[in-house]
Image (tube, rainbow, N blue to C red; front, top):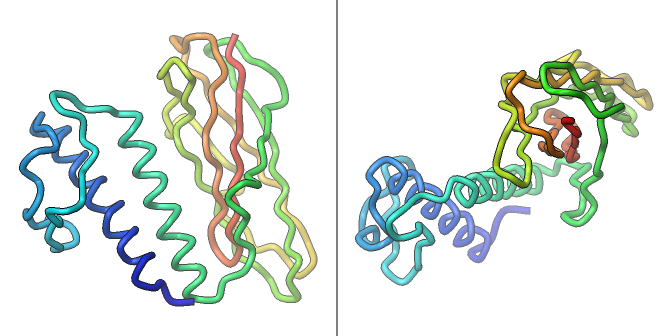
Length: 198
C-alpha cells in the first residue's frame, strides 16, 4: 500500500513540527515565523495554514521527543506497508515488559526478549533501544543499554533470545524508567521495557 494524500500530509506535518521544534531548540524562537520557510532537510515549504506546536518562549524536550518517536514510527509503518512487509503490531498492542528485578543505582538490570519467526524463510532481525525515561524526566541514556546479539538470523519457524542489559548510572534517581525496544529487519516489532531503580 503506497501512502495516499492524507498520509503524505500527515508525514509532512510531523516532519515540519519536528524541524520547527529543533529550530526552536537552537534559536529559542517561538512558533511564529516558521510559516512559508523552507525546511532544510526536506526542502519543503512550511504551509502557512498548518499551526506549529513549538511552545512560545521555550523548548519542551519531552514534546519534541514524543514528536520524533511518532514521526519515525509513522515512517517505519508507512515504509513497511508500501513494501508489503508483514508483522506490524497493532498500535494498541505494544507489549509491556519488566526487567528481571529492581536494581540500585550503579548496578546492571537485565531482561530477555524472545523473537519468534513464524515464516517459512530465515529472518534477519536487529534490536535497537531508546533512552529509558522516568515520569520525573530523568533518563538513562541509550548508550548505557546493550543487546546481545545485536543482529541475528532467525531460522524458519525458529526463535532467538536477545539479552538486554541496562548499566544504570550511579547518580540515577529512584523511579521506574521505560524505553522502547524495536526489532528491525525482515520482522518489525516493538515493546516497552521498564526497569525499577531503587
